[in-house]
Length: 194
Image: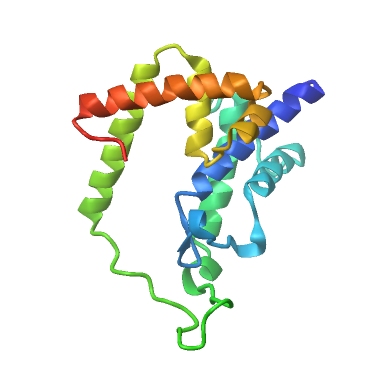
């Protein structure tokens, strides 16, 4: 692989790791709200560890099981993240709020968690919405790439442009198409976009 191909692979793997991390609770706090991953590992760390595990032979690439090299590395990232989620440190420790006011407790207990059926319904709704938006985008690959960046919480046009190697004006134009597709998808789903 060329340097450019490795760089692209690392970028895609980091994006994959980030999208996995943001869906999880870390020490009782959602990643998107500052949940600290044990060992302070970030998306880039997981991407690097997956590649390192392949290079040092810790993880063997079975081409019959994973013909696509990126999918193989994504499965390694998934495994590493899953292992950390299930770790005792993540399940048993909680982050302490060091910026608390004098009359606030050092930590807050999480509110009542959703019932399993509510979690399933929320996830099904999210997937239906995602599929509807992608269907509206059709073969607009740039808008789809921007949609994936937004899902991974890369939302600033300049950051998206840098990540995708585009001009900001191209990103802005594609975001307009994405917004129109989202509006159409929500109309078809019978919802209003908030």
